[in-house]
Length: 378
Image (cartoon, rainbow, N blue to C red):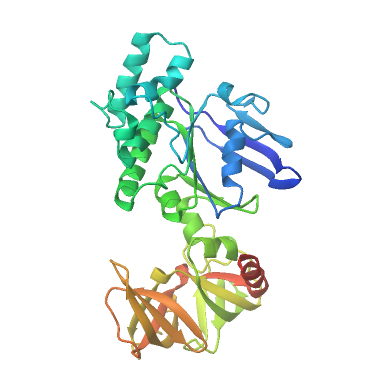
């Protein structure tokens, strides 16, 4: 069955007197893979459970394929949900676990076996039908839970942190397999995760939640490279922070700060695909430049790139370094600030270096917004 569109209209939910979801409105296209991303307590799991029918709405509506399902019980919503704990029956073998939902729908034995065999092949579990789930590895149990969800041929698949119990290697492989299956089957899929890499690598669209509200929605590239607020920037890892003074004019911004190698004029990003500094709220005066550790490059101090007008330059000193497997992460002290910068080789503590950041890697926000975010996060 092809995936159906999902729409939430001004949805509110409460736990007792505590408001969890606050007028959430969003539209998910049929066949789209959407990730709900956020810290613990942001409301992402509540949103998923509201979709599934396990959490009642105080206000608003949920529409599936244009039909209002807000008051329907979970079993009549046409969705399948895969839980973090897998929720498998330990006394049943793999085949019976996978076919459980089909038996509840009163399919005959031959139809159940045929469908169970189909989905076991789909998820790579051929030959495992007679095994008890207690004999399986974590990755195999995860496949059984996925097969059980897919067995009923749902138009909508809800995934509640399904990979969090797996080790890193299996988790990486299962990301690829789930994404490949989703695209092949065309199921509308909504994933809840607190793992930024998981959301960015699997989803067509990412929705970041903060305290029961949507902080940003967009493609993985938009959310990562063009955050709309300091909260989102910090959440996706743009934790390097440099206070600057900004002056905006004619599609450019001129930045100055005691730590910078002179006053620098940089192009601004625009809506026509031209790359430049991301500044959602351009205001002349004190601002904060945020950027990712991998977005800057380091070179020996004195190798100036000032002729290139599309980058920000600053001179500093290496204060520490650590090996991350693919790169070395260095602490670089520049004035009163320290930045974490990735580099392909280890630099010595005490080395003088020049920090270079392309305009398109910079995110500028008014200092007042950044301060409010820091207070909220602290």
